[in-house]
Length: 93
Image 1 (cartoon, rainbow, N blue to C red):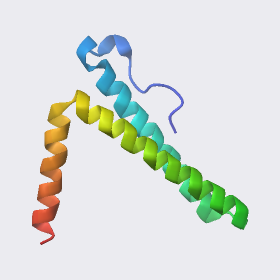
Image 2: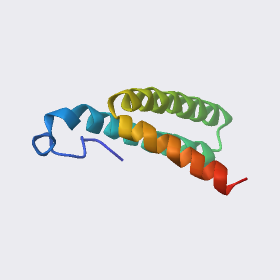
Image 3: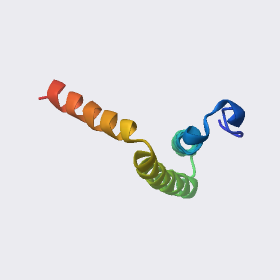
C-alpha cells in the first residue's frame, strides 16, 4: 500500500512531475480498490460489505479522473492506450 510518493522528485524532470504524480495517484487508487474489495469478500457483515463495495466503486471513479488528466498530459500514453485496446480487439475477434 502506498503511504508516500513512490519516487524522488529531484530525480524527475520538471516536465514529467505532473505525469508521475498522476501515475502515483492512479496506483494509490488501484491499491485502495483492491483493499476494499478484499475486505468486502472477507467480511461476514452485510452492512460492511455494502460500504466496502461502495467505497471501492468511488475509488474506480477516481482512477478514471486521474487517467483522464494523465491522458491530457501525456499524449504518448494516450496513443499507447488506444494501441493496446486495438491489440486486444484484434486478438479477441
